[in-house]
Image 1 (cartoon, rainbow, N blue to C red):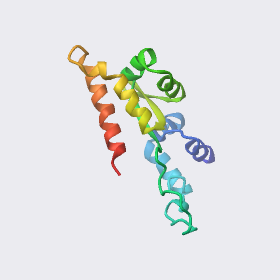
Image 2: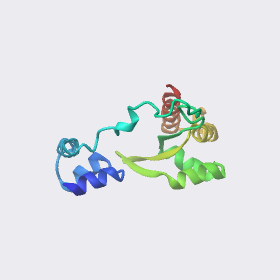
Image 3: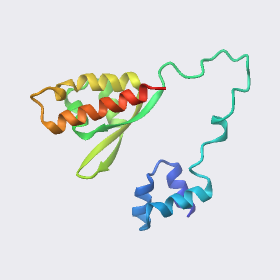
Image 4: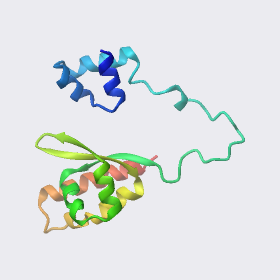
Length: 147
C-alpha cells in the first residue's frame, strides 16, 4: 500500500484512492493512519527556534485553498480579470455529484476579488443555483478569514 501513501502525499483524495483500489474509504484511512501519513508534521507544533527572529508569525497575505463552485468558475473564465483566470487555470477540478468545484490555492485577496467579479450571480436576475453557488463561496471565504 506504499502507492496509496505516495498518492495521498501528492494530493490525491481519500475517496478517489478508495475508488481506484475498489475498497471503502475507511480502509484507505486505516492504511494512511498506520503509515502516519495523515498526521501533522512535528514542526507545526514547535515554537520558533530563534527568539530573536523578527519575522511575523503569519504571512500578511497567506495562500488559502478554497473550493470555487463550478458555476462561478465558468462565469469567471469569461468575465474575470487576468489574475483570476490564471488562478482558475492552476486550480484542480473536483467532481461533486452532478456538478464540480475548482480547488484554488491563492491569497484571500484573490478569492475576494473573484467573489466581487462574480457578484452578477448574486442578483435576483440570476438563477437559484447561481445565487446558491455565490453564497457558498462567500461563506467559505468568510470562514477562511476567521482565525
